Image (cartoon, rainbow, N blue to C red; front, side, top):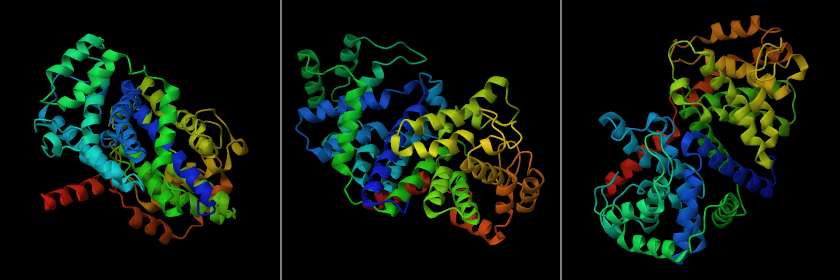
Length: 439
């Protein structure tokens, strides 16, 4: 990434942000369109209030990314909702605004969205969470998101109920004006609804508004460090789907970059290999958490879900032009040299070079990390397994390069990344400490 021009770095940054937004949709299962629909409605309300471009940008992106912190928490609350959550699940759900806000603090240029996201579950009467703010103490943009989020949710089908009619939604919202919602915002929404000035949701409008939000918030000068911070956060979100893979994508990325260097790849191609490592498990956002965390054997359908992550991630990357070059590593990192891998059963040199490298580094980190069904294996065990699998599972030349890495590289990567690294939780704890000090 350091080889990008200034314009190229900005394009890469905005492409990552676009993929993050799309990935959030896939992570939500039946809520796929919820974030975009909430964002468009929030934008219309903000426009009626005369918000400026930056406020509109923060409002829009906050609406889409408000639930970042839910990834890896109680996904059953999304996949199999019930009228009332058990106390432990409720506690985790109520932690997600701070966790989401922590993620926004970690994303360069989007810090202004942090208070919006932190407070998007506060209620006008002070009975919301996480800080029990009330009335005008709740930031205006957060009040808008709260209203738009609920209106959108009521109009969507859920596993435990059908979508509500327009009349039923109006009745629900009116009954909560002054308790959950800012009464003046409710009045504004009703006026727009009844006058027909709220256009129906359109995917094209969502994309235009997303581009406008990015233009308003992302400066022309984007550094390699800015991109790396966003890439780190993105990989953390991917790994958060499975509590046993904290730091996995970053370790695979760093190891893959070292292998590429040993193979004599130029700087640009080495960057491509390493970035592919960060994104190689992107498709896991589409896999139900209960399957990723399962401790026993997988059934046929569950195995299909797991194997689908390669094509799902590649498809998402292919939809973002700047990121298409990283799709082959995502799609083919579970192919085998002998043709017995997936998703296409490619063999030998038909497997893209980047995928051949990722396959080895991915397998090494999987073996040396604890899983729900087994403890972590040691470095020597994993090295030997890769050695004896050259020519069957793994490409021989790339195995030779991997095995030539000095042991201190493996130790340095483990120490720098850490097995339990979770930028979401770290950032959220920082925000919580700051809030306590300030309050």
